[in-house]
Image (cartoon, rainbow, N blue to C red; front, side, top):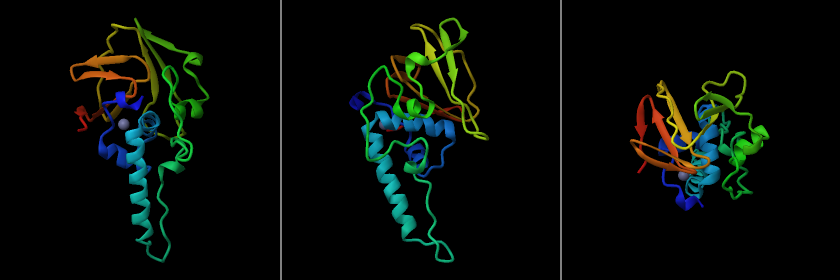
Length: 183
Ligand code: ZN
């Protein structure tokens, strides 16, 4: 249940998502979180409505109204009319639908002891990386740099680090090396 989700993307990240302005890997992760989190789903819907009504009242020069890239236009958005209840042990529906994958089908590539990765392909020219990680209990993630924004979403199980514990649906967001804490 979404009530157990306590760590959400930053408001600025949700606004960018609603405006269709996030990079593809970040949009994929936010989209997956939003499919699991009723609270953020409501926020994104409100933000998209506010964005489109502002644009409707401000026609572009020449009388044409600019059409915003709203999340419902994005390959990563859930159809607003058919919200789906996400079930534990399944991939979030935006990821499952885009890649035709289920957790059992994934061909994991072993990266090291207790650590597997599956890279998800992005559109041609898209920047960044999108991958699924699988860790055995007690395994530590190798230390890695954060050059830009990084968003980690827990799909099953939990992990913890110096900043606390993250469970299914929780998001850890790092921007240029700094942890982003919402609320
Ligand atoms: Zn949320």
